[in-house]
Image 1: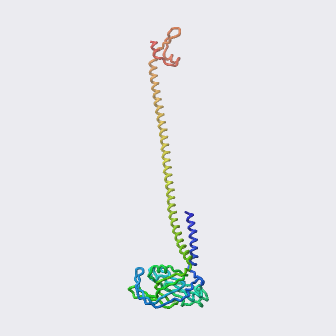
Image 2: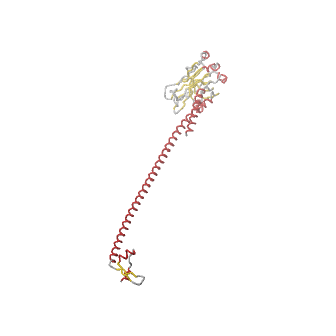
Image 3: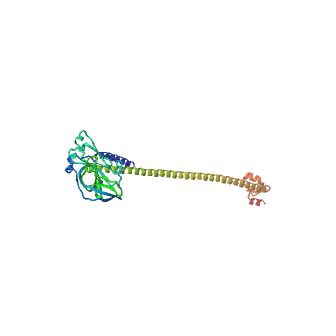
Amino acid sequence: MATIQKLLTIAMLLLVLLFGVSFVKKGEFPPKEDILPELRNIPLMGSTDEREFTMTYAGKDYDIAPMKKYELWGLVVSHNKVGSISDSYHEEDAVDLKDICVVWGKNIESDVYREMKFKSGSWTCYPSYNSKTAHLKWDDTMIGNNHLLAEDPLIQDAIRGIHVGDQIHMEGMLVKYSPEGTSWWRVSSLDFNDSSCEVVFVESIEILKRGTPRWYAIFTLSLWGILACFVLKIILIIIQGQAEKMRIRGIEENVRRYEEEEEKAQNTKHKGQNTNEETEIAKQISGRETHEFAHQQNEEGLEDKSETNTGKEEEDIVIHRDDGESEYIEYYEYVEENGEEVKDDDTEDKK
């Protein structure tokens, strides 16, 4: 897990570096040599006999009133970002899909566009000079800020895909439009300068040449890569946390089992000691009782012998000698001399 976290951190740092570089590189203006000759043309306007019509977009109806036919070739130098903080007036469902600021003609031929900076607000394009001599070459009539509307979904997607640095060609109508049921109209300008806005109902649009497609691709991929690495790191942290909890639970379970086994062993040991003590006590008691019983039996035996001997004190013992003669002797004298008692048959001999 730690190795994976390190690899993700390294990957994330590299992606952040790519993101920063691509952020600067994307949208760089191409040199004059890479500009198509068509972009030196001035936009064309013409009369139209198109009548007012209604267009539905994002569930809302809009009244569209055509004013002029319109055709434009130009280099995209800036555009707004619908739904972003920098364009709080346009929401995601805004009917004007994108505002593109384009330059053409002399501003292309003189290469002055590369000495300029451009910024788009919610409704206006703001050019600024980036060199001391740029104002001498700049022509305010060779720039336009176009609010683009379209009914065809394919054209809508093409408009959303336009980037800074792209060279485009589009045809349509300059129009005024109003949300149905209201008296408010957004009206297109019919001249060209940095303060005017053309409202264009686009009927066809073509990106003649992409500006910096690779850097835009790197920018997008690096951004998603950073987000993916971040999410993976969070997931790994959660997994590591769960694994650590399981490890701690396992340790606690092992400790609990060890303590239980120790307790059982201690109980068994104490039980064995108690049994040995009880056995020893039982042996001692049994030995004492056996000793007392033997002592008692011995005393009883002596008493019996005493009684027997007492009964034989008055009797004489007959001794048969080798010469055939017989001799009478007292019982106690015989016992003292011979150390044994007289059997019953000896007594019978006496009798």
